[in-house]
Every structure is written in C-alpha cells, then in structure tokens.
Length: 431
Picture (cartoon, rainbow, N blue to C red):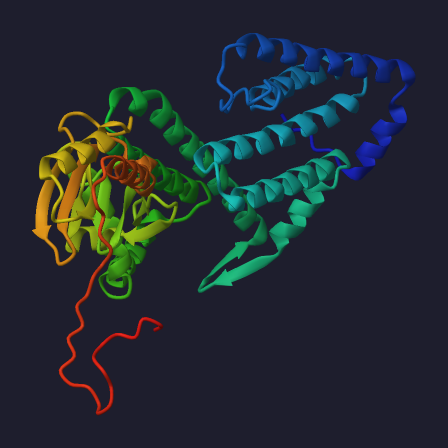
C-alpha cells in the first residue's frame, strides 16, 4: 500500500500539480468511498450489540467503518493515479489507516478492561502517536524520521539495537497482544457463555484462554522483531528462582485463585464469612477475591487466605439464610401466645420464606423475664438483614403491646450490708 515513498519535495511537487478538476475528482472519489463504507457498515450492523468491536455503539465508531473506508480509498487511489497525480486520496488513506489503528486499540481495550482508567490514558497515547505518524507520512517526513531512528543505536551487552527496531518491536508486540485479547474476549463472549453455565468455571476458562493467547502473542511478537526465543530459557530459570523466594506469596495467591475456581469450594454469589467479615462474593480474581457486605463495604481477601484459613460458606448447602432476633417478656406471660405473636410478625414480611417456617423458642429464664428467640429464613440476604430484622422487631413490639404482654425493664436488687452511723435505711421520698 505504501510502496511508493513520498518525501517532502514530492509532497510539495504533487501539491503544485493539483488543479481544480483533479481536486474535484479526488474529492468526489473520497466522498464516494466514505459513503460506500457507511452504507456497507450500516447494512451489516443493523442488529449488532452496542458493545461490538466491529460496529461500536453508533455503527460508525467501530472498527469496520474506517477499515472499509481505508480499503475503498486505497482502491480509488490506485485507479485515479493511472491518469492524474494523487494527493487527497493519499491523505485519506493515511487518515483512515490511523483511525483504524486507534479504533482497534480503543474498542478492544474497552471490551477487555471496561472500567480501567489506564485504558483511557493508553487510548489517548495511541491516538497521538497514530495522528503524528499520519501527518509525518502525508508531508513526506516519515521516511527521514525512520532513517534517523535507525542511526540511533543502543548497546545491550555485546548487541547493538537501533531505536527504530525497538519502536517497531513495541508496536508489533502491542498489535499482536491486542489481537490476542480480542480473540480471548470473543471466545469468552461467543463460546464460553453458552458452553459453560457455571460462572466460576467460565471465569477460570476465560483467564486460562487469555493467559495462553497472550503468551503465544508475546512469543510471536518477540520472534517477529528478531529476538532469539532460546534465550528466554535463562529468563525462565531466573523467574522460577524469583518465584521460589521473593515472589512466593504472590505466586501462592495466583495458584490459590485457580484452585478456588477449579474446585468451586466457593463461587461467585456465595455468602461467606471470613474471620469477622461476612458478605457476598462478587468476583474472584486470579490474585484476590472481592467480598461485599450488606452495608456496602467491600473486602479484598488474598486467595491464599481462603485456602489456608477457616471460611464459612453460608450458601454451600442451599440459598436459605437464617436470621434471629431475641425478646424478653414478663414471667407471667402466656408462652404459647408470645410464640404465636413472634411467628406472625415474621410471616407478615414478604421476604421471609415459608419453608422452613418461622419458629420461636423459649431459650432462657433471664433475670428480668422469659427470653424468646425467633428464627426465620430468607433467600435474598444480599438485600440486607438489619432492615428486615428491624421491621420484624417493630411488628413484635406492636403485637406484644396490643396483647397486653409485659416487656419488663431491667431490674437489679441492691443489697446494703451496713450503713454509716446516723444514716437511716429508709429511702427518702425526695431523693
């Protein structure tokens, strides 16, 4: 596509050769290419999802539109160049090529890392580099710049590498890795979501596919820039030593993450209790697990802790969750009546399930009265427990008051062994 290099003198010469008729033909051809690309993209993107990398949210902000415009414009440039000097179409080719590269990086990175601030910084950096390269190529300064970069060499031991080779290697590696991430995201979206119903197994499968494709892509990129892959064996040995000593905790967390996902001892959505923190697992990363409590607080727990320490999985047997509340009534109260009031207060709440049904027990003969404990179950503990317990306590209080059941105040008996001389044991009413 770019076999005919254009220096700055060629650019000024072509600019001087452009006349009004030739400029009109090129502009018409460019508009036609853009319109054709828009029609084709619009036709194929009618029923595509909003997160599609090819079509984007508004059809034209995906990868397919600038890619088709690039192909059509290059074909038009080759056709028009047979009978007149070409300038506008060459500029269009460079613009659409830069736009296609920007869209590729931007759409893939947003699909793989949707909530990362680093992705936005990377998008802006790639956009600036792509547009600068396009401007340099348009004015004919890109070949001289590349030649100057090739003359600048850096020494790595006994090997000298030019700055141009480093830049090309970085760009090649970035392109290969982005394509690998794209393939991994497509496999996860189109295959794993349908073939693997379990969320934890889908997570470990997507992580394994992504890691494998990134490794293969990195090896291809290193091989493309001339790096001897046999030298990586030394790096692998050094990395193994580092993992064995300095990075053993980090390696243990990564290995524990894959063990958790494979064993499925805990899964995304389970309600667990780790030490004194209780909540629902919202995500299992390769290094840590996110646990969100009912009050919105979120804990980041290293995966090694979930393997080596005691973890209560409150959802392992079934999805029902037990909640209790305690009340003390007077000793002269009717036990059966109090139990009925407690159970009816729980049954009146829509979130309380009927199987098993709420049940109240006389648990203790407390100093101030009879102590009852109400047990009830819910199937949605993620919606909150304190709010439900508060509503049931209010209903219990109203029910006991309506039935005339005494709720005694705490009482304590003070025994006085002796009094100072002149002090009477009779209580002064004024005190």
